[in-house]
Length: 141
Picture 1 (tube, helix red, strand yellow):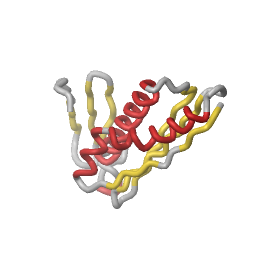
Picture 2 (picture 1 turned 180 degrees about the vertical axis):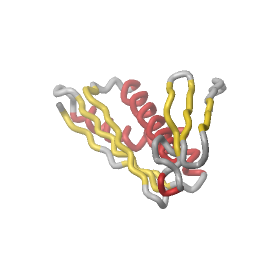
Picture 3 (picture 1 turned 135 degrees about the vertical axis):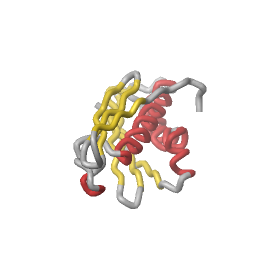
Picture 4 (picture 1 turned 90 degrees about the vertical axis):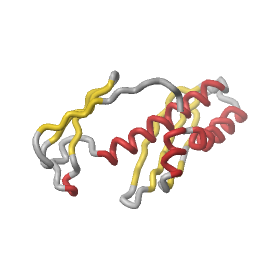
């Protein structure tokens, strides 16, 4: 990974059923243990944060690859699901401009898988035994 320093500050208020905050330069979010773990459920739990990190890495890698190939992207979304067995599935949806060529559509389809292979967070999670898959869609506006 890069050599850029990152600082994250966590503060917890109370006991297991209470919550805390997680802050960094660009975010300030409430954290809590899930209800199933005896917590309040009133905040992001570690699993949500981990999956959010994987999703953020994937969409950033995806947009970098799409832009580096000059593809005419009008819309880009990624929804991500996870299961208790810890399988992560990304569902990217790329909408290209109406004048996109067939070659550009095919390139966007290849990039969906390429971004998965290029995501550093996803690759680290795979080394930890987490299964990650991608089921993408490319359409024209």
